[in-house]
Image (cartoon, rainbow, N blue to C red; front, side, top):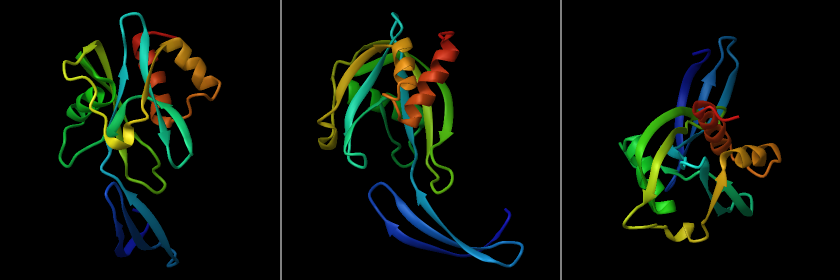
Length: 180
């Protein structure tokens, strides 16, 4: 570590995030503060159908005041396996399940101030889950869009898909599947 931790203060404990402030000292002796958002992480699902369509969810995102096109995703419960989280979120948000799962990668979403890690999975051999969707109250605006993966890549290029986890999942999934 290029600095010494002098003090750690828990400033806020919330339902989804915590805020910690670290008081640090550089090797030069100068001191600084680092504000850290602590997040439990999550799982993201690239749903890939046999005809090369993928599934996007469109939902209202309050920080931006508009709908955002994203891959299905959700927050990890304490000690939850990321694959189990991905499977749960796929069913809850889309009403689908999958027979074949593979991990694409894990990403740090905003490493300058947040410790969130998202685990991105590829789901294949999709089928409608017998229980259907199970949307939470805040997800009632979710709309599903089934889009050819090449069109989703074009949507990224046109800045119609701007969510980082979604961009990473689509582009890495397309590469793994041999799609350009």
